[in-house]
Image (cartoon, rainbow, N blue to C red; front, side):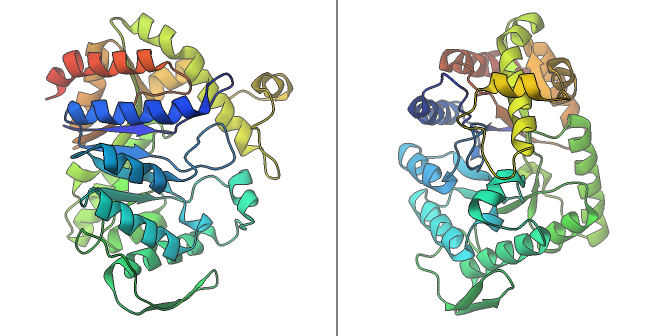
Length: 346
């Protein structure tokens, strides 16, 4: 079972911004020392939910302080960027890391992320595909020209070039949409399972992906498909839930809140104000513990991971750093996972 880290770099009230970034770096270094295969960072904008506004810049820094661990984006939102910029920055990270870059793309959430950039949500699927394919072509071809309704590229030769051949692995954060899966499989891109999907939904997506790959006569390459989950390990299930409850609740609250905002952000508004004015509740901690998170004793967490293995999953991504959980608790959980969970899933 290959392992990876995943983080949003969340910024709850009362948390120092700089500490989030520095702690994330130390978590990646610890994961590398433990032999993890990859470390993945999410892109988001204008929100406390995630400070991953320049995810490739973050990976460029990590390239300088790590040696072996692969560095991934889960995901870049291509609709918010010019494809040349993504291709250039990605190529530079690939060079600086010695060919350790993995690039995941997804359409993200609409709301104010699109609004802040002045990007319309109409035709987002077409814009997404045009941008992803143009990035791929810029990495592979010479004299690239593209006429899209959303951007124009004329006779461009990318400098610098990527190290990996023909290009860094491309991942798509897909849903059960047959259209998206067809786009991914047709171009031999890889699947990644988002941390915000219920586990059952993620498994169903893996099964559908495998079936479509078989129908196309293509390998599913599941050994390179990361299945991301919220993870926390403590000596007992009760202790693990006590450690993470308020952090799990905060994640669900901020996700619900930011989806409701189309022309402003929640950054400078107290969370309590939203909790008092909303007229519906998001999924509660009990739901997340049962349906989405792998939180509990070492044996419980190992059982859940081994259940995934029964469906062919062999690359597991751990979101240990949950929304304000202290660095002490994060590293303690990582070390307990290493000591007691890993032997049970190997």
